[in-house]
Amino acid sequence: MIRLADAHCHLDGSHFQEGPDAVLQRAREVGVVGFVVVGLAADGERSGESDDERLEPVRVAIDLARRTPDVTACVGLHPHDASRWSADLHASLSALAASAEVAAVGEIGLDYHYDRSPRETQRDVFARLVGLARELRKPIVVHTRSAPEDTLAVLEAEEARDVGGIIHCFSEDRAFAERALALGFDLSFSGIVTFKNARAVRDVAAWAPLDRILVETDSPFLAPVPHRGRKCEPAHVVHTARCRNAAPKRRAGPDRGADRSGARRASPSNESRLRAAALAAGEAMLHATGKRLEKSWWR
Ligand SMILES: [Zn+2]
Ligand SMILES: [Zn+2]
Picture 1 (tube, rainbow, N blue to C red):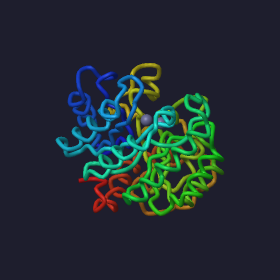
Picture 2 (picture 1 turned 120 degrees about the vertical axis):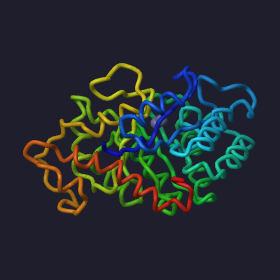
Picture 3 (picture 1 turned 135 degrees about the vertical axis):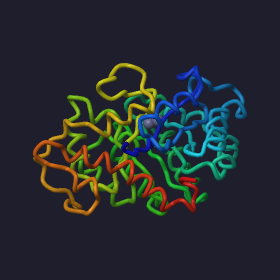
Picture 4 (picture 1 turned 90 degrees about the vertical axis):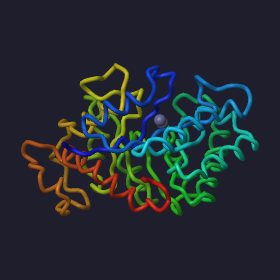
């Protein structure tokens, strides 16, 4: 059985009333061996009025990671909720993010597609949270939508390369990918790569170095084909990894010919490079995150 990791999933009770354990078990049964579970302060559906209530989703993710060996947590404040940032919330989030169970600070970033918080506020809060990750010496999980230039500008200005991290749910172009990789950010691909109209994203996945890409579900959103339109769960990451629709005719990426076993297994004529890369990505993620094991990426 292939070994894959889901680099980004939301398992909140509001989405999975059965609780996370059964959901995780279904994924393990198809070969998913690691999970990064996201816990967000002031997460929309469960956000209360007090900071203590707003941090409940963060605590839930940390508790799950504490009692589940193959789960690690990332915690942050989504750009949608940037306007709910306060110095007190930041301090409390910082204390929680310092927990050993927290692998990374995220998702944080910019979302100019929905503009649920003013853009200036989003940039300001994003910068502060990059600062938090640097203080904690933990990598960053970046959410970016319709804001490529400003996202890179904040990462560059705040010296995010000191900690690196992941661009989650990658949906940008190759120029963005090149700059993100240079800043020390790996690219995590969601079910979007299986969508018929996502050719540009598939091309980036087909080009990027094998050891710099990951797969994720972003469950409960963005279910890959053949589950598109339904609720996504971590077991579905297998379909993202197996995506056969990539165009293999792209020129070789920087590490073409690398000796990863996944690459050697690939037959460009009938099996896309993306498939090989994505299959390898589960291993690569375990491997890559293993490098950060000392920093509690995987336990
Ligand atoms: Zn996101
Ligand atoms: Zn997410």
